[in-house]
Picture 1 (cartoon, rainbow, N blue to C red):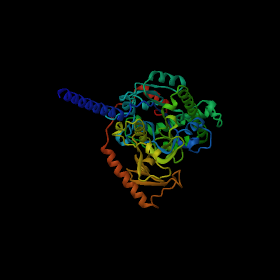
Picture 2 (tube, helix red, strand yellow):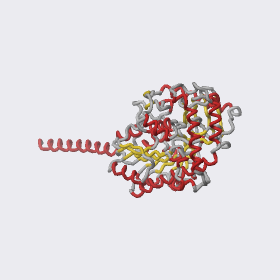
Picture 3 (cartoon, rainbow, N blue to C red):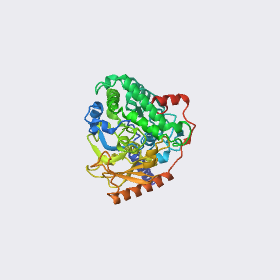
Picture 4 (tube, rainbow, N blue to C red):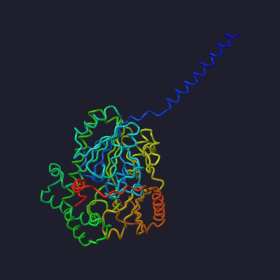
Length: 483
């Protein structure tokens, strides 16, 4: 009898152990695998979407990108979060808007409470690093946080890519590359210029000097440590703008050449990724931080408005093994959506608890042809850097971009006023229809105002710094930011 009871107790113990082990095995099986997918972000500074073949440009400026896009996802209406590099890249790598992170001048550094994409991925074991050629995305602004290896480079050549991959070794990695070819089109190698026309050295130099003069007039008060507009030099600005606009035709040639130059460098990088076997394992994201204006509406360069020549940017995503390849997404999206999309694909959405953007993966899994169902804020401009009396009087220095279906609205908060454009019939935003469609305008205005109020409550003030040191100013001057 005792032996029988002993055997029964033994069986019960075994059964309990099996249940416990089975439960442990089930929990282990149910846990998401540790992310191992490489993530590569390739950003070409100042690249307009409408200058690329995949977005309908008839001139051959982007053969490599067009080939990549054929096996990727193309977002047809992607918007930069801001119209110049510093606030736009800050929004890209933190999934916050400008009114939250506040990086709007060189005298501000990212609040330490806002975590970057690199910090998040480094925290789960990713090797993080890359190369950049615009100092706004480095230590000056705090946007280098989270990188183990982050250095300036003139161009991303094969040897740099090999070096990075060797450093990453067997770890999953985030590789960020930031190039600036179209930012300064007057510096593009002549071999690319001659494919589109002829611009002699003297013309290129004259344009460069005219641009420097124009930019100096617009930033004179900031350089003098005074609020923008303290000195009203509008007449001088108008004269300088007339001088620079006279170069519009040769600059189109130079810009096309710079886009082709960027595309050539992109091709070199992708070739090495394919050669090393990384290409089909990685999420590869190609984009730009903003576009450029060439006198379309009385301005030149970037940062002074939120129309599509500045805000609509390329966004092409190649997923491992060509997943989702061939899709063209027509819904309007923002670059603040990039970080949530990465975390969603890596199955670590909890890292995006405070993200303001949305994952784009649901758009790739839903039936095609559906229009946006609700208005959405895509971008914001807060200007504390430049001054132009006419622009300030017409639009103010706080502007919000909001879209619903085919409508694009710009809420000018300080004026206040709302501009409304039908992108189906007026893609170049020439006809303000706010008076013709008051109900649509009112709804979008209310959405923008509510969004601004909410955004201000989320603000985490940046660290105030005196400004760049002399060496940094010298390098920024080479990019045209200082004079």
